[in-house]
Image (cartoon, rainbow, N blue to C red; front, side, top):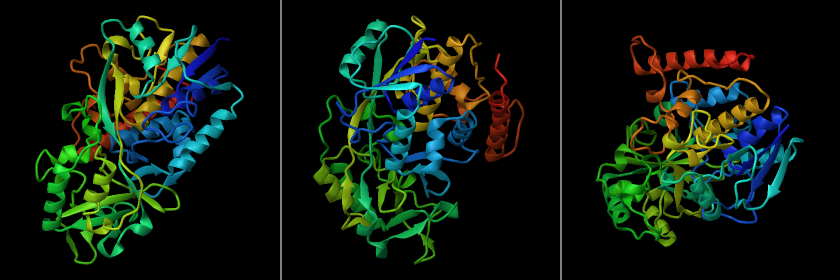
Length: 437
């Protein structure tokens, strides 16, 4: 049986390689780290999480919660490792970054059907290939891909990562543990601000010096990873309706909600470091320290990592890819991950699973896997391959792209729960050995 080359060992590449290998397919996994690093990465391990350690909501009334549960039931490597290395985060699934990457790296390295090659891929090899080079695809590989997509090529947007601070440096006299609306356990450190403190912080944030990023402009930023300073410039109240929203967080010292609240989320299992939720940024490092230290609880914060900004590159997938993430003009080549225009860790994993499962089915002489629009994994694949989509932008999974129920159900949460129930019934049939037509 043919060997499949998977280029890139991020979430999507690892998931694709695992699905192939688990089905008896020989895999050649090429990863350029640690020999060559990107501006956003710091570890040579596979499946490194850059922007955040959160895989977002774990509830079935949330679309990403549904997608995660679908992946679990389909045997996802990434979800298995995420669940095994999770840290407390209320109703969200967050992981210990180091343990998560280490576990995935070990499983991939030790699989008998996967050969790991540590080098930069500068060409697209012959045979079956899954390209999962991510949003920071090297220049050489980007050129090779562009040659396969004449006249269409790449699009790009800018992405940012949030700073991380040590818990012991947080002034807990000016902070408290709680989860919004008391949902789950009190896993977040909440750093309140008075109106005067907030306005002073907001003014300095709007005027702070940014690090130079070639070609950057505010219009090129993906809404889901908006730098906090870009968000601040949209208006005085924007942050208070976004990452600094105080609603649902009652300060135990006063019994009231504060004017604004900055939240910190645990970034490792032992709870020694926390990331500043929603504070993706491309301010210079000195400006990050100066401005973020204006938050009372962070006045003496020790930053173990500052926020960084980088460019994400993705394909014009509706014109290039089919529902199996295959290149329409050359179906032996598939893509997976953020390069396809799916946005988010879980969505990248889903694309890798689809590409791996479909390639394995084709090589084994089996029928294609047509995940329907009633499922989150199918809806995402059908969205990125929908030729009628006009101004294609990176897309998180959402209930808006999943097939409606066809009947009215009162209450948004009830409706979403019903959609999830329908989806998981379909997924269960597949995981039990059924197939989609």
